[in-house]
Length: 229
Image (tube, rainbow, N blue to C red; front, side, top):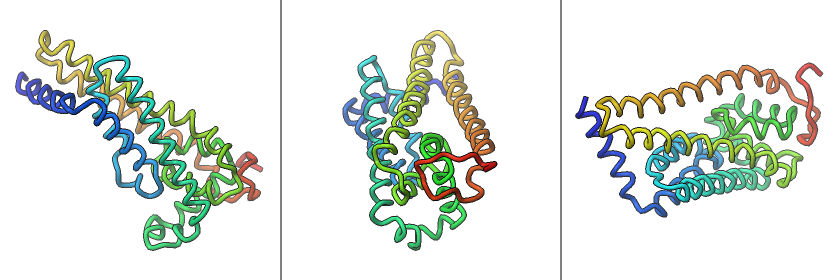
């Protein structure tokens, strides 16, 4: 069991050895790419943020990481919105856009059409849609100011959760490593419980929201409709 602690300690020390400013900026860039249109489908921004959070060593570093991740997320989503506003149809019908499947584009379009700002908020926590919705909103009637007003709290919630879990897991491990042989498994357990909770939450969100992306609404993303209308 000691070998596991030794390996985990070496990995955490390697992350912590990176300059705090550099690893914070890397986390911001990672989440910027993760929330940018289409790039977010291949860049594991959530993993990058958690890894960076394991090196947090003070309240100031924690706050700085949360703020940079929020800014990175907002920047990525703003790029997606701008691309949707100016190049949306071309991206949708491009080779890469077609590979995503017309059904995914239609789901994003119907969701934004029917739920407006709520779709922007909730999509931040849904797979695939979190990359397509900013671009889809850019192609809709929703203004950028309204888009940011809905995506900001979602980004704050997302960033706070992921940074907190990474910092909590690493902090708990470092406190117990010298006193408890199985401390490494506590680190793994915290991460594993969080991942399972995220997966379950996403499944429940998908189930509760699926009815809203089954058919088009009134064509105005600034209004909210019930699926039963």
